[in-house]
Image (cartoon, rainbow, N blue to C red):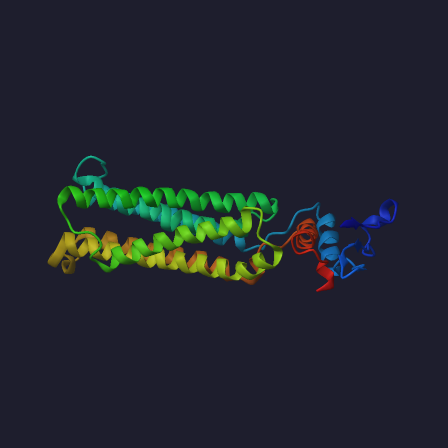
Length: 301
């Protein structure tokens, strides 16, 4: 297979009349097929617009404000969780009865804050290369998984030391299931988008499912965290919970902050105008990748 791009000499290369000729030679039933296609006009327009702006993709005016709001809410959620555990639950420790408190803090940091930030990578980093964005997206998910795993180990160790039953509540069932699904989601994402081998068509078919289940797992993680807060308050405060105890009020505020963080993240993700646009060179690479993995011209299908 041989790819050629005929380019006019001089400055005319930047014009919108650049046509690519993709010559693919292959033998099928004793015949040679020649595939010709032109570069997609949209790709040329995007490239022309990028060159006019110095190669940078413009950022929607409201996007930075919503991203900043999401980070303020996320960091506040982590800080309020730490304050709740420090003021009313005795703080953190690994070798004592306070080991349990490691669990909620790690889950909030990993399965809520870092997972939410990982979802926002493709909205925030609009001018970095696609591979750099993918790696950052994957690394944030890895950090979230590791921190969440520490939280799971902490609660199971605590239950073992105290001779408490495991996995009896709705919170524990949902939490363990979501963690397993989150790990599988990361494995599939790595296999399709970072590990070389998946074809162009397979990636395109799986991408909508990856996006949908990523957002779904984030929402379920926030919901499971709310279940955990409710369970902790009912076990810790019992009947005092209905008497507007300071701990209960603080935990309720934490729950509202979690919901606000989730709403802002989902709003950013669902705005079509805020989707990271594909750069011109990325579109060209996508066509080359399709040709290499499927043995055919992208323009011929």
